[in-house]
Structure formats: structure tokens, C-alpha cells
Length: 196
Image (tube, rainbow, N blue to C red; front, side, top):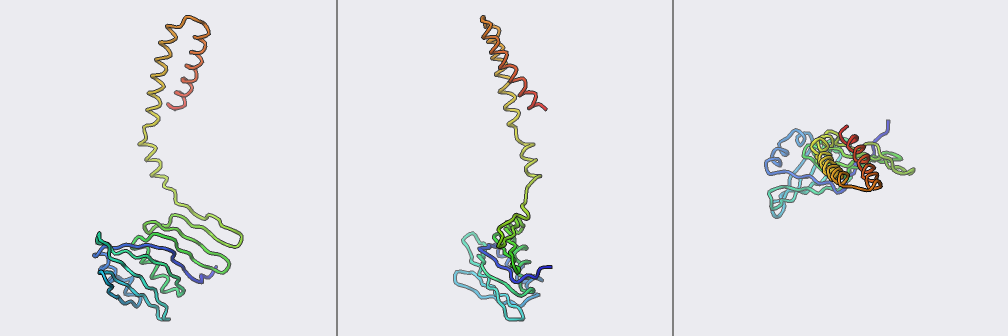
């Protein structure tokens, strides 16, 4: 099994409400690791997580006008205990961004959106290969089910068929009737496909 050398957060973003910030500071995640809070200008807070080895992660939360604390995090974490704590915070508070897990000879790159993994890519000297990509199959099926494009096309074909039948009744030349019959055959085939 490959041994992880480090975990790197690249332009990762987390956001918390004031209530969530209080919950976080009182949570078991924070109680399992040494931390301190620095109050910043403008009401923001910087949370510093520290491992017993002395490694630190600085998480600056800026207080925005909408009352949310937003943390833009870019850092590299080495010790497993601190890595695990940052990962749990990141997923618990629905972080978004890129997380690289660095191994000897390759990197596993995770793209997160709202605390959930959306894509995993393996990067190595040989190139880049997609390992996993989230597909919202249920959502796509629901959108297809709710779509009425097929019904609209069927209605349009019915109108065109009615127009062609009127033209066929009024047509005198045999060549005109042949062209109309050919168009009717095409519409009939399309209706068969759409109604199946």
C-alpha cells in the first residue's frame, strides 16, 4: 500500500455561519487537536490547528457582509493526525476546491464541491488518468422525465402531417402527390421513433 507523503489544499474554500463557527469551535473535531483562535480586524477569525509535532495549519476566516465566515485555504499538511483533522473540517463544512494527496511517484487529485468528491484524477510522470467522476444519473433521469421536448416535437409533426394531407387533397399533379407521400413517410417513421 502506498504511503502518503503529504496532503495539499489548493484554493480550497469553506464557509460557515456564525452558529456553525461556534459549533465548530466546540466540536469533537477541534477538541482532538490543539487549536487557538485569533480575532482579526473586521470580525474575522484565524484558527490555527497545531499537531504535537509542531506542524501548524492557519485557517483564516474572513467575515463577509452576508454574515458568512469564508476561509480560502492553500496549504500543505504532512502529519497524519493534522491531515485527518483538516480533512474532517473540510468535509463537515462542505468545502470546495482541489485536494492533492501526494505519494511517492504519483499524486491523487480530488476535486470537491460542497464537501463531496466530484472527480479523482491520478497524476504521474506518465500523464494524467481519470479515476472517478461524479455523474448525477438520478438527476439526469429526472430532467429527462420532466422534459417535454418530445411531446412538442410530436405535436409539431402532427401539424405538419395535417398540412401535408390538406396539400395532398388539393394536389393535381402526380409528382406533387409523390413528394407529399415521401414527406409523410418520413414523418411517420419519426413519429414511430418518438412514440416508442
